[in-house]
Image (tube, rainbow, N blue to C red; front, side):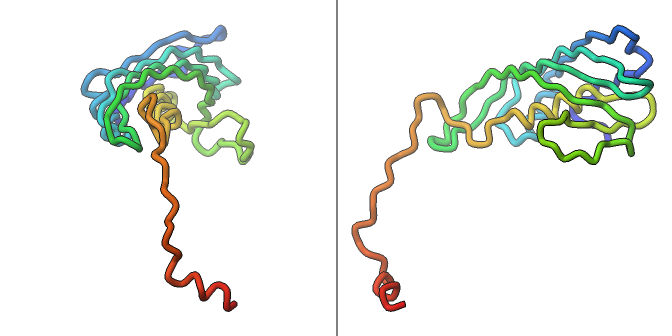
Length: 161
């Protein structure tokens, strides 16, 4: 199955000095990403990459993701627009050669098969990771919770134990 934002790149295009390239999602790809990310809207997504060959078939990818999205405030339930800019670094490695290292500080590895890597899917994954899981409209504060003045009906039982 082809992902929503598919940008294949042949490893042959990455020379000994690396490759600088940029990708941008079309309006249809943005709409599909909004569905995937469960967002009201993805207005724009782009990424500038610097790719560096590490050996024959491993690629270090440094990227700067830029996106304009619409999120829903978890407090007011109002939609609001967010501009994102996120720098990231990942490694493309041949499928089956992923590291067993579970260090959270190490680079994420993206497996690939053949001679093609998918820059679009890498950007989609980074977008998902960069999203605020509890988005709040700027200036919105959590409402004060009133203390329950009536004791719990079983509060007396707690004293018996």
